[in-house]
Image (cartoon, rainbow, N blue to C red; front, side, top):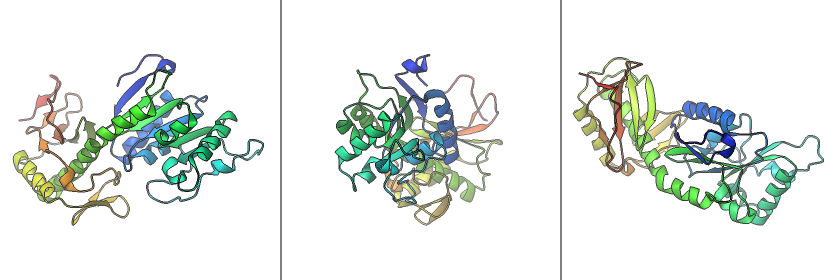
Length: 308
C-alpha cells in the first residue's frame, strides 16, 4: 500500500484486489471510510467487464441502486436524467454506467446531466469514467480503478488522466482473471481428488493466490500441479452458473466472485505451484502459493517457515 500521510494530498494508493465477493465488500467499506469525503461529488470507476466494478461500488456505497449491474438485474436508464434540484424528493447519489447509457443518450447529453447534478451538490458515481472524461472536460475528484490491483487516485492538474489509468487496467486485469480461475480450480481438485478439507484462507499475491489450511494437507504438490495443468490444457470454457457457482467445462465450482474469471482455462498462462507449504509465523496456517502469468521472483519473508 503506497500513499501520502495526508489523504487530501493523496496521489495514489494500491491494494491487491480481492477476488471473493465478501473480501471485496469488506475492503470497499474500509476504502469508503478512509478515502471518500462528503465533498466528493464526482467519483470515477474504471475497470474491464467482469473485474468486479459493481461489487466494488456496492461496497463503497451501500444501498445505491445500480442502473445496469454485472448480474443484468437492472436495465433501466439512470434517474439522473430526470434530476430536478428543486424536487425535494430527488436523490442525492446517482450511478451511471457510461457504456450502458451511451445506447440511449448522446455523450454530450450524459456530460450535461452529470454537470447539472454535481453543480447542485449531488454525488455522481460514474462507471467507465474514461469514456465520458473527454466530454466533461475535467477529471473526477477520486477514481477507483480495479484490475489485478485496486488503486485509488486523487488526480491533480498534473494527472493521472483516466486514459493513463485505463491503460494500466487493460494491461493487468488478465492476471487477476487467470489467478482467480487457477485458485478455484486448484481448490476444487484438492477437495475432490485429494480428499482435502476446504481452505480456511483465501488471499492474494501479485499474479497469484494463497490458500491456507489449519492442518498441513498430505498431498503431493507435484502431482497436484500436474493435474491442474492438465485441466488447463484442455481449454475448457469458464462461465457463471446459478447462485454462487461457476462452471469450468463439466465442473461446477462454488465461487462468490463468479464473473471474475478468464473465459476459458486455456487463458491461464504458465501456471505453477510453490512446491512447499509455507507456515505463517503468527496464525500457524499452512499456506499453498499458486502463480500464473510471467515468471517472477517470489520474495518470502524470512519469518515464514517451510513445512516439513
